[in-house]
Length: 366
Image 1 (spheres, one colour):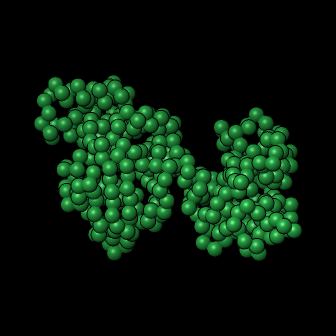
Image 2: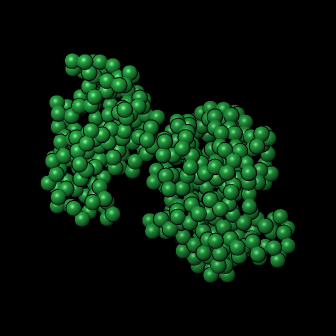
Image 3: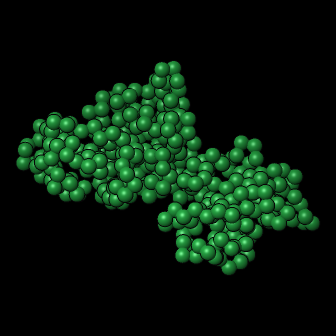
């Protein structure tokens, strides 16, 4: 398939810098997720890969060929946008078939390809309908089908599930995962939702203010975020950030969060005495009903609020001067949770960041 290489891509729109010296390599057949907030530059980057926008500076390569000046039709790219962008006067069949009509493919082949992709996306029953007769989920499936039927070398998805309701998003997310694994093409998928990123992708490309902040396997990036801001973004309910100071006691170094909570950091050379740090803990890293063990850090807590999210609980608790957000799936033990006095975190799920600038320094894993 197609490897995509971007070299020092910059783009200004109306004098405002949207992309700033973006260097990026997306491996052939990868499922790469562009994750970042609105304004990060994700859509502009996708348009530059597609060829509908030209960079002010930099080059784009597909399998070593410079395609910077190629028009979109010469790049063999299929793109799916947030908005449904269907032809209102055409049936669903003809909307899906439209890119094949442009290529002047015979009608019998068009019928075969359209029905195959419609079967894959479970929309064969609406092929004779017009877009206004379809639900939002059916319309978005049609847009995806139109991209798939082209069989391009590269698929670009620009937050395609954003405008759909929760249940439709969940169903389509599962189906898209299956499709991505079947098409064997290079996929670049943009989203602002970290759960969507984790569910769909293999490689994470975290963007912020027009720059690529972190690239790597998704689980690895989430476990070792480049900085505190990335950690906050990788969790839908943020990350717990605790102030800590390194002090030496006898022959050991300890990172003190408060008088009760401390971590032995003697094995970590980057943690130095008398300096201050930040300790980051994802809400899902807390364990509420684990046995104490040498691999766990104990946090004394006082629960003062529990929010039931349906399949999960958000437990808000105090630990000294710190407020902790704890995520738990133990809904059946709601009463027990309200009376808990301790929570536990595995050593290797405690993240240490520099106090100045928030750069990730490492975990407490021994």
